[in-house]
Image 1 (tube, helix red, strand yellow):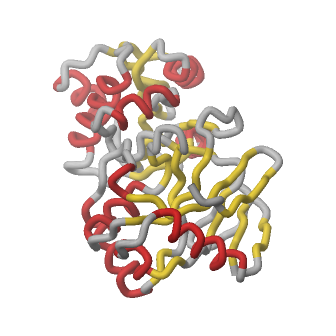
Image 2 (spheres, helix red, strand yellow):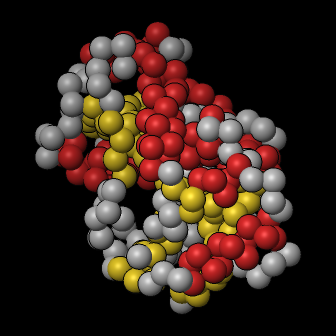
Image 3 (tube, one colour):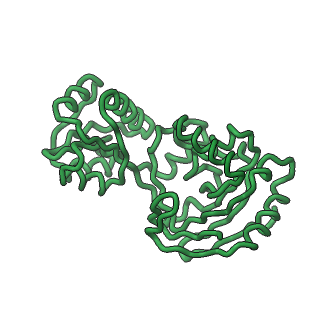
Amino acid sequence: MSQLYTINHPSITLELAIAEISTLHIHEEIIPSFMENLRKKISEDGVFVHPIIVDKETRVVLDGMHRVAASKALGFRYIPVCFVDYSNPHILLRCWYRTFRDLEAEEIEETLRRLGLKYEFMGLESAQRMVKGREKEMALLTRKGAYAVDDQSDAEAIYANVKRMEKEFTRSHAMGFAPEREAKEKVLRCELSACIATPALTKQEVTGVAKAGRVYPQKTTRHIIPARPMGVRVPTGWLVTDLGEDELNERLRAHLSSMTLRPMPPGTVLDRLYEEPLYVFE
């Protein structure tokens, strides 16, 4: 295998490469409309801008599920990736809370009963702590307290129930996503009426499902990478070629070496705000 373009950050090694899409495994569902928008943008740009994040050992995609799907739809054989070691303790695995602006207690209780989910009402802090500890499978947090749903130990079963609840609530309410602390604080400040507190998975639960060819619902995981490479701008013509990975990775090394690599601090806004430090190719 050819030598890869490597960025050494104090907490993580980032290896930039071009990999065959057929060797990768996604772990979350794809939202068709989001994928289609990405497909159009990549096609119009003529370049693949940001690499997806992939565990080098298992080839499970940690970030970039929709870019993988869009690339498949475009007929790409290859895709730009950033390989990382998923066992690195500095790679954190968190979750997204589902948020609602006008979901009231009566509808929450009625929906839980209709879905046959057993629950108890308790304080927000206790419910959130029990969900994090997997003593409860999820909890509906409201300003007056929390509806904590009895535990399912299996991660796929937990998120199957989360998906069922999403489906019921989104019939008449818009749903958003927010990190755990932000969602709870917005409920307490009355900016949201409720949020669904969900548990973070383990890394083994992510790779196990992905390697088995199954997926969790959208926005099940939130990976925090110590640093992220951006702006590789790989020509899409490279991604449909019959050339082998080694030759393409030699091209990639030369391509990236010809650009300036600019470190940027956490909180930088590019296409969105990034919590982690960035390495931007210019």
